[in-house]
Length: 192
Image (cartoon, rainbow, N blue to C red; front, side):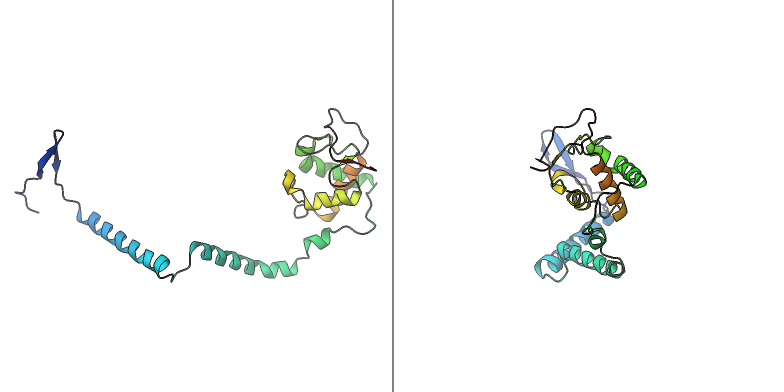
């Protein structure tokens, strides 16, 4: 580096004179390398279309994940067939099943339907009006499949078929009860 060189440039703007400081060599080389990398990257992925795009990489990752899950899915029984209702499925009257259903309801359903199924965000489950059908099979279908448009998740992947039957039986046993502060009826009245 030339020590006799004057670092102050000959021009001045608003009383400010500019210094001509040299950049460190490592910084200049790093800048040049990143510029070269950017040009190669642009040519490889965007101009010549040699490499996969981000969307293609995502699709490849999803396909690999599905391929990895295929052996497990082949040995697992289909959740929808295991959870499908039997033709003669009726609500249980067994006290142990109803107690199990109440416990599951309190743990999972009371947040939206209230502790006494009086209805909060979700509908009142104690009256005779039903949005998705009044039959017991309709209730089980709603529990299994959920109602995503209204914020209710599908419970078939979370609860076992016996648990769904238990909570459905518990809800069915609440029909006609009069909990405190019930939500107004929604849907069609049973028998209408």
